[in-house]
Length: 476
Image (cartoon, rainbow, N blue to C red; front, side):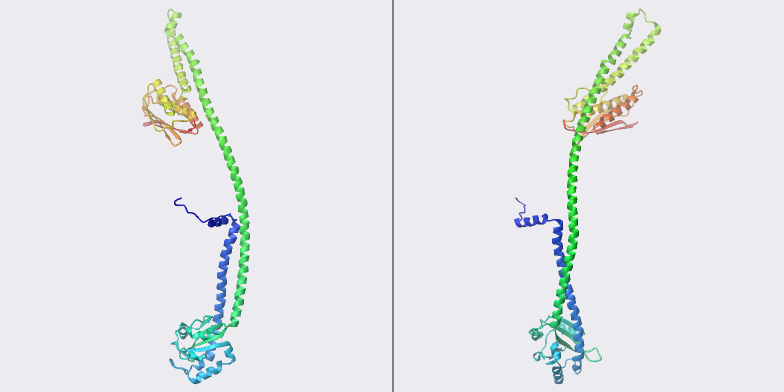
């Protein structure tokens, strides 16, 4: 495929093997590499420091040797001049074929310009070489080097099968700081080479043992931590598995509780519908019959002339019976639920508005936004009741106001708003305040049963707005 990177099988195998190792094994490999590299650098540095320390000692000793054996023979030397034949013979007699010559393999005396004015190797006398070591020594510095014979003028010493220390030092005019010449000696360093070898070997042994000890201690600590992590990871997996099982059980219980809640809501609606029907078929019919019995025509059948003192009483009884019938019909209307099972949510809410308009003669402005085509029966019934109760309260307490219903769905939430414009009627319907509190409480209980909420905001000018927010269950 385009853009895919095909890795060699060997690379994939190496990555898999590395990831398959335990943390302690990965640490052991990585730490071993890092520690051994670090200890190699440290061992090399320590060996180099030992070597430099020995060279500094050898340089100091060589400087003292040149001050004691070479400086007296150059005192006659003028700057830029040559040594006398007498000086050459004296120096040869002191160093060539003597015990001193066993330790000091070769001697040279230089002018500051790089010209050899004396050497135990006579072929070099009079030759001029470019040497930074001579220049530095001419400025008063003592230089000691070990096995660093690469210059042309040391060709003879390079041919000798011995380890050498090369020392350059200034030769002063006695009693002054004037440098007359530069002395150079080559010391036999076989003993030093042996000591350096032994020191280097001991250093590496100590470094390796220290590294292995450190690695063992660190590995032991990491191994214990790795075992702890493995044990905790196993426990964590077990806890996660148990948590998943509990979550699955909780989800099953939630679904059972949800079904029970919906069943209870439907059973409640059925109960309210039955109570409404009983009120309509029972007390309302009896009160209607009582009203007919108290009519003037019915009373006239029994009395040729109704006593004048009974007329107000009969009228009062007839009015009380009429008001009781009206109140019972209102209660029956609120309890009985129309057939909305086959209606969509939009049609059910519009049915609630139309039913209110038919009963009261109000005109309600309806605005519906996006609504789901399918929704649970309990949510649809609850939406119907919210609109019904909200419009009833608006009619009772703001009869002359403009009323509106707004409904829309946003994601998984259904919002219903019932408003009145705030133009309050002068005389609220009798018993309205208590009925309103009861209705709002029933509305909150109904909406709360579906895990929704209701808010009521009242303003003397802007009127009242009832907002119900319902979570939608699209599983019809």
